[in-house]
Amino acid sequence: MIYHSLGRTTVQVSEICLGCLPFGSTTEPKEACSIIDRSIDAGVNFFDTANAYGCGRSEEVTGAALKANGKRAKIVLATKVHWRMADDDPNAAGNSRRHIIEQCEASLQRLQTDYIDLYQIHRPQSDTPIDETLRALDDLIRAGKVRYIGCSTFAAWQVVESLWVAKELGLNRFVCEQPPYNLLDRRIERELLPMAQTYGFAVIPWSPIGGGLLTGKYRRDKMPKTGRFADVSALPPEIARRLTPGLFDLVDKLDPIAAEKGCTLAQLALAWVVGRRGVTSPIIGPRTMEQFEENLSALEVVLTDEDLAQIDELVPPGSMISPFYEADFGPHVHRCL
Image (cartoon, rainbow, N blue to C red; front, top):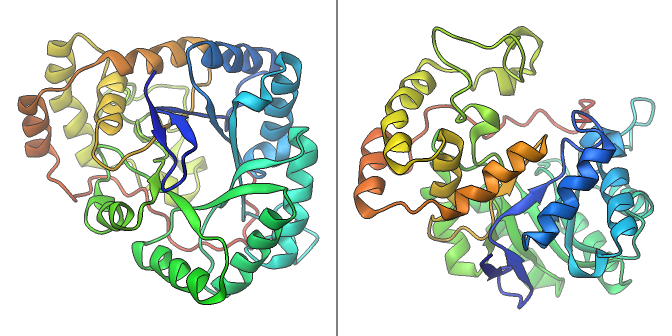
């Protein structure tokens, strides 16, 4: 396992991050614990969850597993705040000071820990001043409850704005950004990745295999009866729109490359993200041990300059086939994931 610095910090994180979204929902706690133990044995020391994952259930399962194996101190544990957590409370959402402080306390309890290594703002919110958000996060750091802070799915200009505000007010700054990045959506190459490299930001991409769309499971003439995209009508609109004709074309054209490398399509997609300049640690989200082992083996896939050039012909740098950046639906929507 290779380790990288988390942005400008000297904290070292594994080259892949274990995403805990499925734990406690599509993945039963017993199997989740097994995946967590196996990942630690494999050298993964970076875990990512959120309060909205299963309405807190992911944090509970992750926290219980780390308490059971006694390895919390070895883990860089990240969680997030933003989405609505209760329908009957108008303040139970967003990036306000009230919501951040309240949800940090709740996450600490669910995770059964005294501190969060990386606390992230899950989405930007235009109607909450960034200085209010940063002041709340800075207070949590000063109180010893949070060690570093980051953001997720912010535009490059929003990240730079946060840096300016932090400097003006003498507050702790974000150290990382968590954007969507995969072979279907390369738009962060236009501004976000250059910005991150300029200002020393870690980049920890979510959905490196396109939420399963780059596994080869979904084909134009053969859609599965089960799976996330089996019933598109039941999906939120920002997710359903990812199922584009171009997606099916790309999957078909990537098949020969994966076959030549002797790997699965998912491993090819993940290996591509892992190897991108400026990427710190892509977030994998295995639902089963089998999926985790497949993801782990992607680290052994070596892509040559010829492979990368061929991929660039299929998906030009900075281009997009399926949209992964979401519109601003706002935290008012009930979004336990």
